[in-house]
Length: 289
Image (cartoon, rainbow, N blue to C red; front, side, top):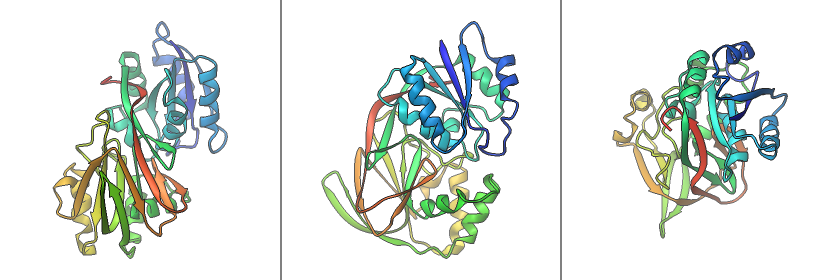
């Protein structure tokens, strides 16, 4: 199988610094004819992936976090090229959804036994995403977190507590012929289950059902935030009275917000936001394929 590893050398905490040796040692060379490319700048992974599709690669393996996965997958949607993942980011939500191991050695060994699974992708105003995206508080946190030099899950949680002064916003949502005005801290668009680190905002999301789970976190007393975070960490967020989940293949959101996040990466928007699912549009090379 003609394979390219696309490595983001600065994702997460840099545990991928010996990736060449690890791949050489543990990959099944009888199954994979591979080479390795390293990214040098923002969106470089996207450029490498685009060229790899033209060069008839069959499998691209993202070595990085959800941002790297987003860049590469955006070029693979609707193609016959599959996406594999070795998670080295801060969150790794998409990889963990598929049960991909965090340790690089084990993730490489999983690749040797992985199979292709066809899943949904999504887009927000035409911009692709594959995992969990959103508007409101999580987009606010993503925007701040992307500029921090200290990464990792603990720093992400610290940032959440630091920003608890964030006020709920007014949103108009349109879906399935309905229009509602809501007050919410955030609306997540979940194709998969989690933000990362097994922090499951939408534990019942199915990545191949042709639907997006729109997770609405209602306004609530701030002293209850630890309870909500604990439910999310335990995969029980859907049981909270402060969380409402709407399943639909499309939703339009109207608000005064101008920043969303797509797979954890902040993105500016203007005007209304339309989120759609693209059923069975991406091939994933995963342990449970």
